[in-house]
Structure formats: structure tokens, C-alpha cells
Length: 229
Image 1 (tube, rainbow, N blue to C red):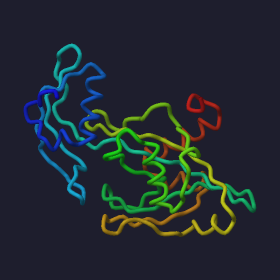
Image 2: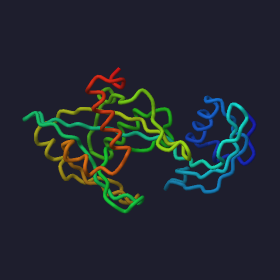
Image 3: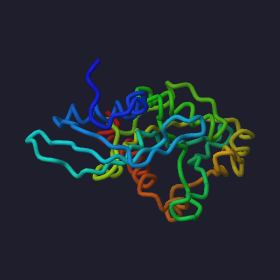
Image 4: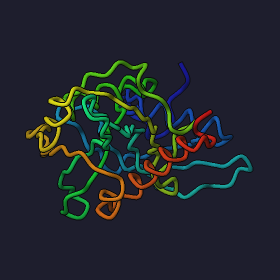
């Protein structure tokens, strides 16, 4: 086993998202030389959720990168189109929930963090879709909307999003039952209301760059762009 770095705790070394971040640094020719945990934010089970790190990372030319890094880990977003099998009506299945970043309601697609499952974004996408919408979907029905995860703010954090899409045809009664359904984990402050949305009606209410990008990737694929290959 490689020798641990200055400040590198056993807890960090056991955290999959930390090991994945170190691997990405090395793959891009950078060298992590030291790390200090400034803040450690645990999940309910005690495992690491987020961490604010003070680091020494040198680029391939030996120059130091900015010292602070927010360890979040990767996530998935699933653009979910549902079709009424009785009428052919098509809508996007979206979620409304209040977010602490600004205190307002957001209109989003099903999504979730990879956490411990850093090597299984597809499996996490299937799980999150079931947990947040109640829809049990076979992995083969999901398809990537981009050929690689896309980073949200690489100047500070390691989070990158794996974008997936799926189209589900449902009987009319199941289709309509999704409108106004409620899900979420109250113990985690998660209160979700489901809705069926036309793109033109949804877009003006979307205040997340991540969700607007998801729409762009979806329509790019429909046009046969790079993401469709």
C-alpha cells in the first residue's frame, strides 16, 4: 500500500470519493503532496458527505494549484420523459423541492450523489429514479446524454454530473398518478412533489444551470448530435 500523505487520515483513505479525486488528479498529471481537512460533513450514517480540504497539489510543471478544494463527489441527473400509452401525450417528469442555497422551490429532474458507488453511475441513476419517483426502471432503458461526466465548478470542487435520459411509456392511470405525487425523505429535509411538464412551460421556471444543461443535452441527442453516438 502506498504511504499516506501528510494530513491524510484513515477516514479520508476509506472514502471512495476521495480516492476517486486523487486518481483523477494523477490521471491529469498532477501530484497531491499534502492535505488538511478543514471541515468534515458526515451523512446520517457517519460516512463522509462533503469535506473542505486545504491541499498542496502541483501541476505537471511542478507549479502549485489553488490550495482549497471542496470534496463533494460525482452525481447523476436523469432526464425522464413519460408517455401516456393511451393517448400518446408526452411530458417530462420533474420534481419540485425547496433548496437551502436560496430558500426557494426548484424545478429539477431526478438526481442524486454517487457517494460510495463511485464506479456505478448507472446503478445510482436507477436507484435515484425509484426513490424519487417510485418508477422501477431496468438499467437498459437508461442511456447517457453525454460521453463523459461534466464538471460543475472545477475551480473549487470535484463534482461532475453523469447525465442520463430515459423514455417510459405508462398506462394512462399510472401516467396521471405521477402528477402531484409526493416523495422524499423527511428525515433528510427532503420534501418532493412530482409533476408532468411540457418543455415550454417548464423552462421559464428552471433556475438551475444544471437542469438547463440537461435539457440542452436531451434535445442535442434528439437532433443526432455528438451525444447521440
